[in-house]
Image (tube, rainbow, N blue to C red; front, side):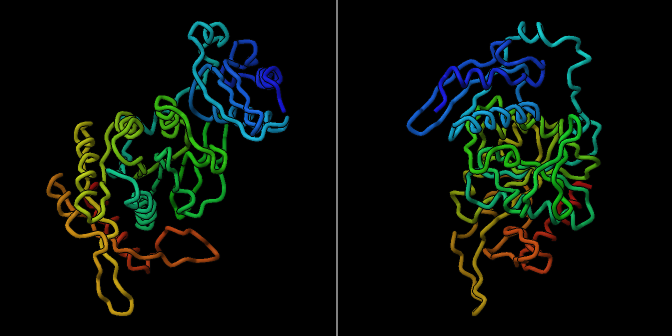
Length: 353
């Protein structure tokens, strides 16, 4: 098993991606701990700038170096170097990466649409993915940001297996069903927990907007984390303006909790585009009877409270799967729910033109 000194040497030989000096030279290896019984190495690293592709590349280099030398699992925490240390090494400002602000510019005509919910488990990510695909089927140029940092699931739902490309300092999003997709899932080890703190997550989200080559978009949808926590607030703060769709189930309690997400949008001066009620009922194929498994009235209650429109009600139903082009959560245009999603996409276009 690796010793603390060996870990410090291995990590210290890797360059800080921003100021291009070994981490050992700028005291970037802050802390090392080892759990020998499970062969786990934890490292705390200080770098010149948090967030973005450079940090992600460094993370992968550290993990690779430690695993190649005997570590079974690796945990990494990042912090920023003191400003005077960065100034000492960084050289002229012309050498620093330039920020790409086009997408967040107030002059950019793209419509930001945030998909939010008061709690988890209401199908918010499924709604976000299918609305994005439905808008693309209407001929719109669509991007989708999986901003549900702790519960990212969009790539799996859409059947995405590849990862984004990199061209210079820009990340190239993955395209599926005509939708350009970026997600935290692309940048972490499979099934690894995300244990970053709020400020770092906020910077990561900012990089999704500023360092991804989105091209010209009509709509950029964001699958927000449930609730009104730091990440959702960061997104609302970053965007020059956005419209929000609130997802709820028919249960009155779910609608009560979802109202908080709507209130947050209003407090941050973003408008509410409408409400979608998911899991509204189950319809038997044999009898045609509808069973209201999760109760009734939640969508209407939320619409009344938020003074907005009910865009649609989605029953419980599985999509038609194509084994040759597998995407487990995407409904086909011929599916009953696919038709409902298409109708909601048309309403969104009408409301935003």
